[in-house]
Amino acid sequence: MALLFSAFWVKNLGERKLKEIGQVTHYFTKIGVAVIDLSESLSIGDQILIKGMTTNIEQTVNSMQIEHKTVEKAKAGQSIGLRVEDRVREGDTVYKILQ
Image (tube, rainbow, N blue to C red; front, side):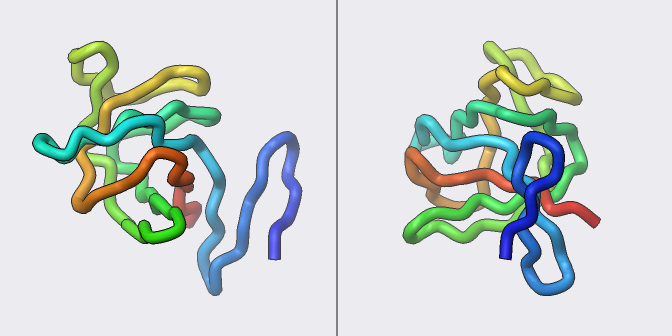
């Protein structure tokens, strides 16, 4: 079940709500880093879910970079590098887990 709020989608997943915030555009296998184009803001400490056909990873954002510089927060429209706990694929969707 998906509900439309403002100009973005929020999905109900049991007791949790997910807000789509971006998409994986590249994955660097050797270093375990995903490049994510953001459609919404993302901050250190946020809980995220990366979901795709064969991907289902839930993790906390511990660090992220823009142009090889560590940042605390990234805005919509920016591309970030994010270390991920497992393999992701181009086209996977990134959701923020809302509490």
